[in-house]
Image 1 (tube, rainbow, N blue to C red):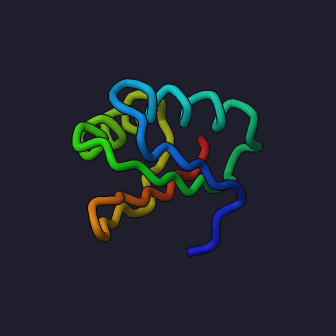
Image 2: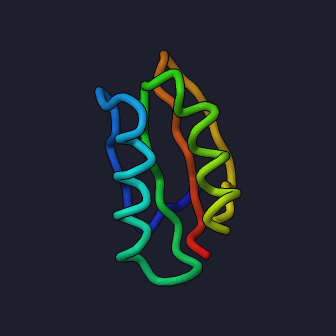
Length: 75
């Protein structure tokens, strides 16, 4: 999947991955895609909840070697 911007939130604990994603998405144009990498176990719950609450579309979520990758389309 192609992303317009990438955010490395590995090493950050809740709520920082979601806060960093929110800040980055605010600066992006509507319809663009953010790829975010996180290794916080809470992100599995936090990121989908954040997207639902803010109206962003979570296009997919994958996990490889303890690192989760999220593709989020800005509302």
